[in-house]
Amino acid sequence: MNDLKAGGFSSEQLASQAPKGVADQAIAVGRDIQNAALNFADASAGALKDHASDLVDSAKEIASQAGDRLQKTVVEQKGAGADYVGNLAQTLRRAAGEFDADVPLAATYIRKAADQVANAADALREGNLNDLIQGAQSFARNQPTAFLGLAVLAGFGVVRFLKSAAAEKDDADSPNPPVRGDDSHDGRLAS
Image: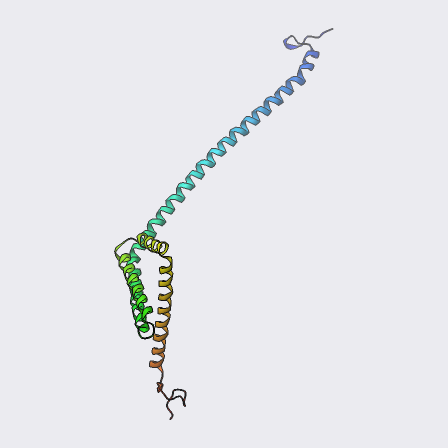
């Protein structure tokens, strides 16, 4: 006999539907978990994007502030840099004087280089550093041989000037200055 249970279902019907109901519930729970995981992943991705956007904005702001500080420092130091470059031009002119007797052509080129360095100092003092750099790059591109030659001559001139300045200083500091033409005592006076 069929026993009727609550709801008008027999125990056999309930037993056959119970596994289907549990399977359907497991599938439904699985779908719910999957949907919850997708929602969590979407929320996490959105939060990460927001944080990344905030970090990028902060980095841009820091870079902008650093650029502003650098520009301010460059403007402040421009005068000191121009003075230094101007002193270099004077040094080149003195070095050219050292070449006048031995190699007058080199002295002429060193003076030309000194004039260019002095012009660069004036441009640095009055103008924009980027303009100066672009001008030097343009000159180097348009006349690479002249640029290299001037650089080499300026280097030789500076080295020669520094050597002569050091020799003059050594002579001034020496307690017994050398006597010219007396090689018998290694340049020193006999006592």
